Structure formats: structure tokens, C-alpha cells
Length: 189
Image 1 (tube, rainbow, N blue to C red):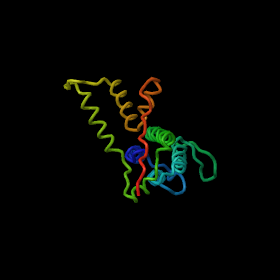
Image 2: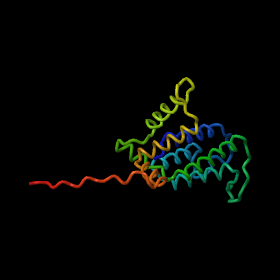
Image 3: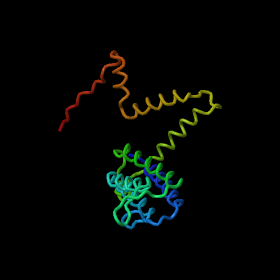
Image 4: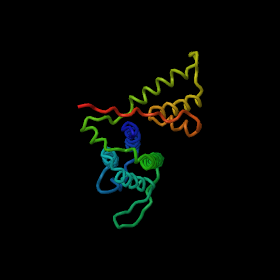
């Protein structure tokens, strides 16, 4: 599950960039929506886990920022470029890639919110940062290297997921045999 916080941080950057764009004569760009409304539409799609519609809205925004548009006669015109539009275009492209690569982890946050379920992994991230940073500081007797910390976290994750024993068994064929299960005791009635 992708933390909602990570998505909203990217959308907040877009909203701030949109405020810095100059007003243009062909504004708003499409469907009578303002730029802020278009970003809110992307946010709405993501909140409901609709990554396909969110990507469509992002692509529409990216096309408009890239400088191509139809005028009133249906002719394609080049929009006057600006540094702010180019910067926002890069952020929009990054958001598109981010959504595309993480679409499997984007859930219906609205449904989880209504069901009073977690939609944030901040408590896990906070714990990991605390544990890792405690060992990475130089004043500790035992200090981890970045590589060592990374490897330890991989092992710890496999232990918590129950995959560690199978991984070790794959490396070392003679590792302890599969644990025997106790036979079920007959229930007397």
C-alpha cells in the first residue's frame, strides 16, 4: 500500500507551481476547468484508487504544459513557453511516472477512510527511521555501515514475512529439516 502522504506531497508541489504560472489568453486549457481544478481532479481520482483516470488527467495536463493546444478554429498552436510551465511540466511528468510505477500499490483511500482503516504507513516508517538512525550515529558502541543496515533490514523483513528460513534453506541444503508438526490429538467426547 502506498502511503497517501507520498501522493499528496507530489500534488502539493503541482498546486504551488500552478500558482506561479502566468495567465494566458487561452486559459483555462480544457473543459472550462481551471488549472487548480484539473489538479484537484487528479487528486480525486487517486483518492479513489482510479489510477487509469488519474493518468489520463495527468497526460492531458502534460500535453497542455508541453505547449500544444487547439485554438478556437481547431488549429494547433504553440503556446508561449515560460520557465514556470517548463518546471511544472517536469513535475507533471514525474507524477505520471510515479503513478504508473506504483499503480499496483495505490488503493482506494476513500473506502479505507470510511471503514476507519489505516491508509498511512507512517508509524512503520517512523519506527524504522528510529531504529536505523540509532545505530548509524557515531556515538554508539556498535555502528552500522549503510550497506550493513540495508542487509540487516532485508533479513529482518524476511523474518517478519516468514520467508527467511526458506531463503536460508535454498542457500544451504543441509540447513535444519522442515519442522515436524505435532500429530493432532484425538478429541474425546
